[in-house]
Image (cartoon, rainbow over all chains, first blue to last red; front, side, top):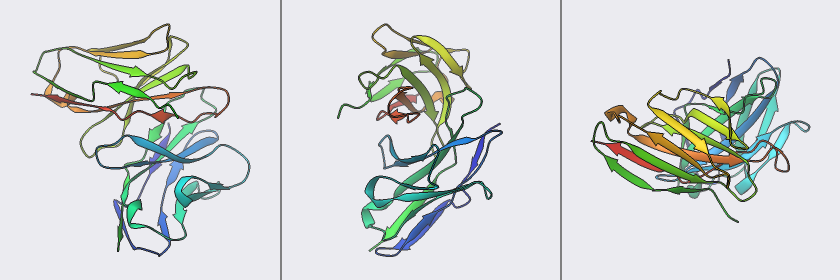
Length: 115
Length: 114
């Protein structure tokens, strides 16, 4: 079975500082990995994904994530945080070998960027 | 760019009533997914359709049913509503080709069961 762990309920960072939101995953085969962001009363917005190839993935709004197979991690990073980055971030996984399409989400991490 | 459209955006129902949620995927997307997000919870997969056929099934109650129509829009039918059905219901769409595997989500339908 697939699962995702986001160990931090909340991450606090000052504007201009680098941020990291952690994600580890478990799948029986090879993963597709995704990050989504949710603003209050809004839908899930796609940020970036890892399918294959380069372990460092760049996405929207200056975010990037690094796939680490040995550590089964896919941490989200940004070099310089903005107050407008404050939102709820979800990591999600799909096992590409099962043929099933559903995404399994982590419990989410609330990012709070202070001015 | 066109996005996933969901209607209605908000819905209030009484217990034991029925509700129908609609989803219109991004043009040329042939796969639709439904997720349920309870208060303070992560989204949970309910069901998906590819080319009008059910392609995957998650934790969808027997009281719920869904289908995808010839124009690729999808409807989630919910009967005998319970208080615990109050949640945000997301629809997402994707296409097997092109932008591989990315599911694009709609704004959601917030259902409140009283």
